[in-house]
Amino acid sequence: MEKFRVRGGARLLGTVQVSGAKNAALPCLAATLLTAEPVRLYGLPRVRDIVTMEKVLATLGESCQHENGTTTVTVGAIEAAHAPYELVRTMRASVLVLGPLLARRRHARVALPGGCAIGARPIDLHLNGLVQLGATVTVQRGDVVAQAPGGLRAARIEFPRITVTGTENLLMAATLARGTTVLRNCAREPEVVDLAQLLTAMGARIDGAGTDTIVVEGVGELGGASHRVIPDRIEAGTYVAAAILAGNGVRVQGCIPEHLTAFLDTLRAAGARLEVESDSIFVPGQGERLRAVSVTTAEYPAFATDLQAQFLTLMTQAEGESAITEAIFENRFQHVLELKRMGAHIEVAGRCARVTGPSRLEGTAVMASDLRASAALVLAALVAEGETIVDRIYHLDRGYERMDDKLRALGARVERYNPGPYQ
Ligand code: EPZ
Image 1 (cartoon, rainbow, N blue to C red):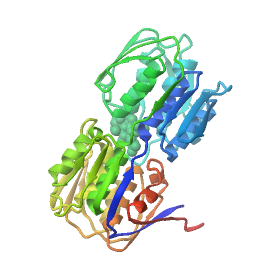
Image 2 (image 1 turned 90 degrees about the vertical axis):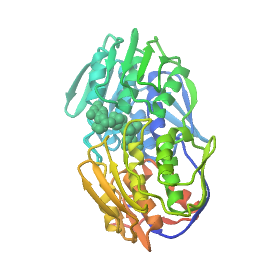
Image 3 (image 1 turned 90 degrees about the horizontal axis):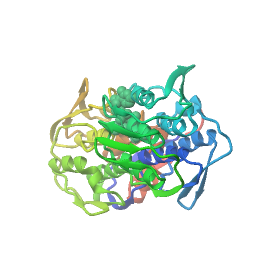
Image 4 (image 1 turned 135 degrees about the horizontal axis):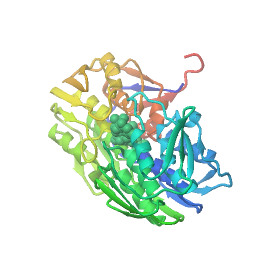
């Protein structure tokens, strides 16, 4: 299993280019199931979750050709409609194929995703929504089996709680449902808006994406389209955090700063110096320490849960006590125990982690547990004294394109290596 070896203390300098958003690319890839015509997607990040989704599409009869930054997805001959467990268990976002498959092929069989490190993460809201669109949904031998022999019909659906992929799944399904569907209490994430832009380019009739109410007028069929996915706001935020921790002047290039407003406002409240341009964020050397500030994660446009772990690492170096409350997932403090082993002062009670800083971090062997916790450990290793070995970095590779290369290009002492078998 590959590891990172990080030697702390290097100062980061230069420009890091942000890749396409994993969480926009995944629903956009699933949306290609809605048409028999080729869909060209630009700017997909080369990360493991995208490779997994392309494998899921391949099992459903789609083929993905890659050519200098363009991924062209076309439907193959196979009319299979079964996303198998061995793929779905590695990436719960595979559930995003359920809505489009059902809408276009009128039946779908997708393995129930298991839980994951950060929580149970059920998909009841997805399934209830599809039933309201006229599908019959059963669970058979660990698979969700959804049928709509007469096609889907429009409905007025109110999400009991905000769900990003639930919104995306039902948005895709509604594009081919007969009549006008109204979705209320929707997720407002930029990735939902990006998906709606692709669907509209394919011929869908959608109004309100990015607000809590989305209206979809069903159409008979969708066609091919070309679409560039938005930059990854979570990757951008991760490098902004790295630059504050260990930088002497780092530009995070090719991002959309307004997708990070809550995060940047919180950093400024902590005393961070940031220069925001239209498509980049420049982080000068920080001079004085950050002040501890408290934050609670919530749905977009509030402080993103996907930046909570990275922010917590920042607060280990800030002056004072911060209370970080994780209100979205029930178990998203996996990084805390490893950070404490590095010397951080953190106490977790329920959904709240209290961080007292600044603490002197020491390099040691740590283990990644989920995507964003892994990033938080790498950030800590950048400022820890001595060498840190981060194990199980396949978690990191799921959502960060070549993080070691990007950090090394900024001057970080990061090396990816494989210790060989049995280690
Ligand atoms: C999306 O996951 C993202 N993944 C996650 O990013 C992100 O953390 C999350 O939204 C919250 O912003 C993708 O977009 C592929 P939810 P999703 O449905 O859609 C509960 C990363 O690091 N819920 O918005 O699965 C759920 O348990 C990943 O890139 C139900 O109870 O999250 C959670 O507590 C991690 N029933 C809350 O809602 C459901 O049917 C929000 O989950 C669905 C969700």
